[in-house]
Amino acid sequence: MSNEMKLEFDAVSENEGFARVAVAAFVTPLDPTLQEVADVKTAVSEAVTNAIIHGYAGWAAQEPGKVIIRCCLKEDVLHIEVEDKGRGIEDVEKAMEPLYTTRPDMDRSGMGFAFMEAFMDDLDVESVPGKGTLVKMEKKLGTLSWTEDEE
Image (cartoon, rainbow, N blue to C red; front, top):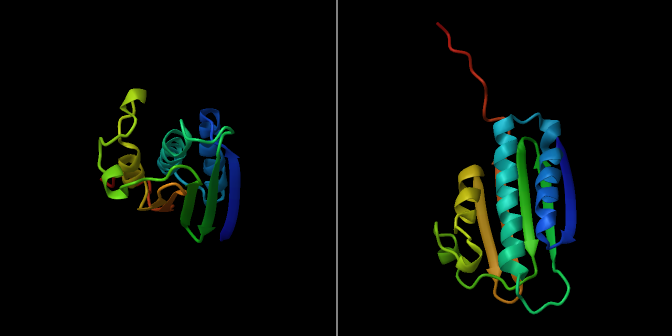
């Protein structure tokens, strides 16, 4: 099976839930487990929230920026890209350290990238200061199975 979708929406916090549910709905043809759906939703939520909070909030633009999500299903692997054209990340390696945050004033925990790494099989972050950030994630679906104990 192969399928693709692209979403583009305003970088406002009200759209985070929409993005999470849209991606979860996109993977349903593969009949993922509830845990797999929860993992994908959490990773997408973190990536979109980072784009809104760190990519655009307080930045020079008067209008809200845009967040773009691209999803592709190839066989049983979900590929997700979350992109913003905001401020970018100065030091991606530092930003990916657990508990590191540039927004302590907003009670940010600094765990967004750590959660994405934990819930997805692969995570790659590309960023150019002043140009934006692209978060790429992959997850193989159908790897979690319910097993019955044999006695």
